[in-house]
Image (cartoon, rainbow, N blue to C red):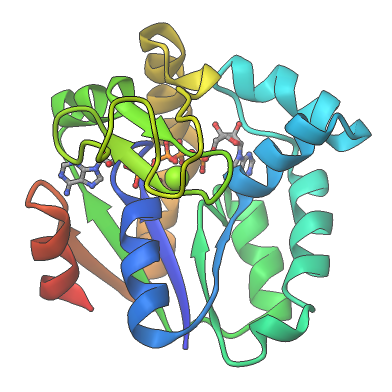
Length: 203
Ligand code: AP5
Ligand code: MG
């Protein structure tokens, strides 16, 4: 099963991916996570990507496409995968079509004010990748992940950058809704419900 999760920043793509991975045993492939790892490790790609990410802009298509061509060739992808945050432009979608056949595209719809609240309250674990929210999904202990890792707030989750990311989403990624709808691959889900309800409704 090859699934694309579409949705604005904070819609819950990462959160739903974790549920799907658990239920269906297919890997979550998040371009955002891959880029943040490259930033932490200080690689050339990481250094270049950081300047775009900090401004709420997209990293250039050619860079992302190279990363994904390599990633989708890895053995854990043989039975399928969840694409979280890719494709994000028409160019990426067209390229993906030439390397994989996607079964379904799930579009998670959430109101703008909820997106802002979700992103500014998000806390992430650098060690195991778990994602919390200070109000909606608090960690067992303040600032600490269940795995013991120190939780951190993403650099791009400051309100000013969040607004820019939302604008980037509207102009560059939202056209994919029409693109996949015209191919009869799109299913939309109301993402304003609780994470469990969203998962039960669609997966
Ligand atoms: P990326 O990391 O993909 O960020 P994003 O798309 O902006 O999405 P987020 O990770 O912020 O949100 P999410 O939908 O995963 O929500 P989550 O589940 O965490 O990309 C970051 C940057 O990398 C981009 O800006 C760009 O620069 C670059 N990039 C990445 N991919 C690229 C590409 N393909 N091309 C070019 N550049 C690329 O949930 C958010 C919060 O809400 C959490 O705290 C969670 O606990 C909470 N929450 C989740 N669901 C619910 C719910 N139902 N109810 C209440 N709270 C909820
Ligand atoms: Mg995410």
